[in-house]
Image (cartoon, rainbow, N blue to C red; front, side):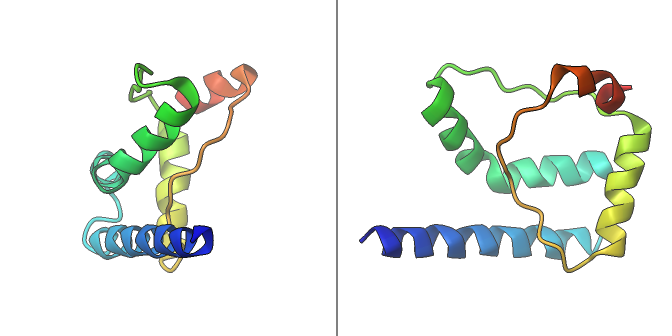
Length: 102
């Protein structure tokens, strides 16, 4: 039963990644649109995952991202159109915040 659930989750995640990839074919140069589209597709699973760790009252915010980080990210999307963009949970060292936010 657990393997079946994992297969269902993997298939759903793959489908969402493909949906975003199809959307990006139209507007692969607009970070704000891409970020909003990504959240629209993955919001429920992101909130479920974060809620499982932090409880139901966690605070999710959009953070400012530096223009050079945006440019590098969007260039990567254009250079690797077959790469799947999926949500992932990770920690970020506070020492790296300034270089991300700029």
